[in-house]
Image (cartoon, rainbow, N blue to C red; front, side, top):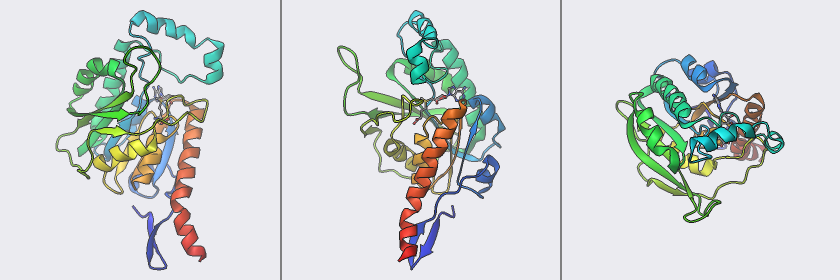
Length: 274
Ligand SMILES: C[S@@+](CC[C@H](N)C(=O)[O-])C[C@H]1O[C@@H](n2cnc3c(N)ncnc32)[C@H](O)[C@@H]1O
């Protein structure tokens, strides 16, 4: 990745460049975000070019019972949800989600290098359904990563304080760091934008990506949301391609990555002006 330059004898980063998907794949730019359906988007990637597909799809776990989820469908019509901008597809039944994410994993497996990794955020209620569905893509289940949010969520009894990442590997996985455990205590970030009710902290994702992607490697997130995974990818020096079905959300994510790119380049600019 040509993001490091020598300034006054000191290696400093220059701003990761925004480009097209083709530019990022060819190494002419460091990041791109496009709009579209996750399955269609992954289908278009050339085979064997991605180091890690790391994603945070809708969890669809709002109700334990399918009837509760069907009730949730009506929520899309509710004024509160319209006002808050509840993101699309979070009201799918479990079977729908299983079929959908299996299709995502199949295409991710095709796009991954043989050494590549696939990570999928979910919560404890969906593990039993999703793990075998994702495994049926041909990827091999490797680990369960725990995000400890350090404070319990809403509810009664044992209030959930964690979310998980189902981690799968392709044929001959390569690891790029070995100093991380599988439990990461990182405080959750409050949503800033109305579109993103479930932002993932880049500090958390950076701890995942430094293990599964080499510097200059390619990270792909087909559910980009507010861009947490993309911001983390730039932070660890990887290239990044993201996609979201919602045009407005894509624009928000681009804003987050532009801000991160500028922040990463700031020390280099300061060096130059002295
Ligand atoms: C849980 S959010 C991602 C949040 C993100 N990780 C962040 O840090 O802000 C899931 C995203 O998936 C998008 N989405 C839902 N269905 C999709 C589909 N079929 N294809 C692509 N994106 C989709 C939603 O618009 C939403 O932004």
